[in-house]
Amino acid sequence: MNPHHHGRSTPECPAFSDRTPLYGAALARDPSHLYEESRRRYGAVAPVEIAPGIGAWLVLGHQEVLELIWDERAFSSDARHWNALGRAVLPAEPPLLPLLGPRPALLRLDGQEHRRQRQAVTQALNLIDTRRLRTLVRLRADALVDGWAARGAADLIGDYARPLTWGVFTQLVGLPEEAGGQLATLVGDLVDGSDEATREATRSEAELLSLLRQLTTGKRATPGPDLPSWLLAHPARLSDDEITHNLLAVLLTGPESTISWIGNTVRQLLRDAGLGAALAAGRVTVGELADRALWSDAPVPNIAGRWARADTAFAGRSVRAGDLLIPCLAAANTDPALQSAAASGSRAHLAWGTGAHGCPAKDVARTLVETAVDAMLRRQPEVHLGVPENALPWRPSLWCGAPARLPVVFPAFPPAAPTASAAPATYAAVTVMPVPDRSPGDRAVAGMPPQRWGWWNSMAGW
Ligand code: HEM
Image (cartoon, rainbow, N blue to C red):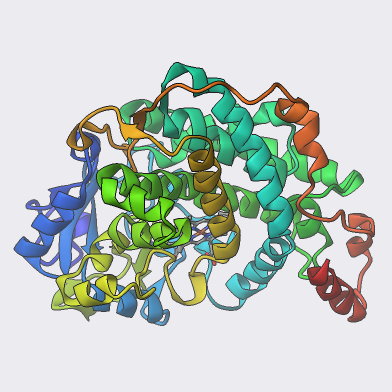
């Protein structure tokens, strides 16, 4: 009997009534206490509710998260397995679907099809020149800092990490500077769990897809120094629809996790005055602080989904075919069994995920975060938290592990001498990828010659 059909539930099913709610007010502050409470109560795998009436298994143990992600024969990344789809448990326009639903893009595919699309996305990301990216981030960072230097107070998420990161991503996907705000708002509607965002999620997803589809069509005619042009040129021959969805996948996974990582790295310093002194004295680097933040405050606290391919026993639970399981990276990283690894400075944390779907953009993300934090601290090393840490409003999202705002105060300082650095044209001049040197239309010719691979790969040394 499948309890999803009958509205009845057993303690072994995520539809079990005694499940921890992980939405709404539960996400208004740092949910790490909820993970610890669930671990104490249920052990490594806990029944939770991620929206009213929508159950899931939250996987909290480090070992269990590894098993779940590595065992692709038992657990799929493809949401078409989800037993809630098409059933009454999901509302007509489920707010979670834009994020958790099926999508013809790498993060929602398995096996050969995943490998094909992942190769195209990874190779395109690998063409980003991290030296030029550093220059671009510094330019943008300086202009943003100048905007609030004289105020003596700023929100390091809203006034810094968010506009900085979205500015870079807008450029990476080849959209004009002024599209950045719209992109950030639309993606926010998909990843946030606030009532307002979830009401907008389906409409925002449609708007994003339409924007990215037009972008893809435009880049086919006129390639630029950006990801869509390289996806079009890739010999894996992704269709325009696949490119559109993979661009959306990059926007869903990249910017907000980078923003969270910047915020959490700075929070290390704000929490511990000694760290600021150690940084100034060169006893610790910004990179080491960023690594610590990956252990203690995973920027992606939960991975959006694995689905059981069949009824199975998992960590002592009876999991039904099609049940949603959520690897909780934040809880896995703070599994008491691992504390000595964290203390030793090892990188055995799971903040990047692992296995076939592990993050393909670690170097790009690290460059962005380290440069952003370093650029801000160079201008003003004396920042202090403007509110008590436990009063920080939390990003109301299962998928973003950081405060929504990071108010800081500091001794006001004069902006740098006005330069042209704030002008969008200046940013646009700092291209971080080459332009594909053949028309993307070429790939429409049947039977692409094998040497295209060699040509493509040779660009990696650009
Ligand atoms: C430049 C910024 C970033 C980009 C472009 C990016 C892109 C991506 C993409 C495309 C995927 C899907 C891979 C696949 O399904 O095969 C992914 C996965 C992932 N990323 Fe990133 N990412 C970025 C930053 C980050 C950051 C800062 C973190 C956190 C430290 C992070 C954590 C993850 C995790 C945990 C996954 C695995 C998801 C899964 O297993 O389903 N990413 N990323």
